[in-house]
Length: 209
Image (cartoon, rainbow, N blue to C red; front, side):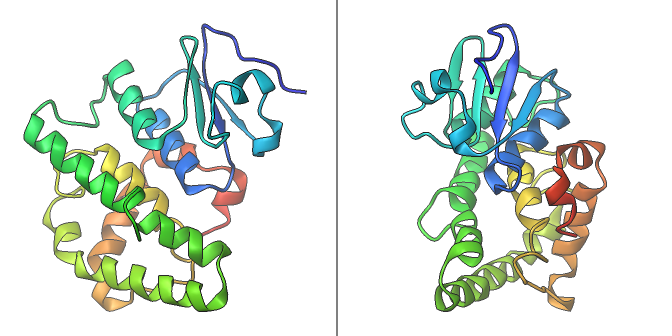
């Protein structure tokens, strides 16, 4: 039986399979945050935490007595709370650009994360359609994957954390980019070889590739 975490600790309640939980685990590992990661089902989260999370969702972050559960809020909180290495620029223009990319990939209608969810749990018809759209979107952005070592950046940002978690699941989602997607795969492999990415994987996620 899980209990309420130590108020002095940084605790992440995480789904071992969910893409959004993977993003947060990647960021925490990249920043080498001293943390406790508890991988579980939503119904296993302590009641005290669920009462503070009206969405009753994963991932849920507990830190300094507060509970955070929106992915974008969690990512930016971690970047500001643990500023090294920085994963968002202090420049307002560049930061806004990255925020829009995160919105496009993770929260907007028909976003990439939503399509991944549909492929995994939707009807065959909807899954096939989402698979086709997601593959097309990735191919369309090949020039941006090839432009710099990271996505439109010389250094890793939280955008890359989002993309890394998604691209790791391509095989599981039955998406093959082929030759047109070479730069996407090259980009993905640069992320996958990072120690922080390897540390972010749960046992079940390791089986995806």
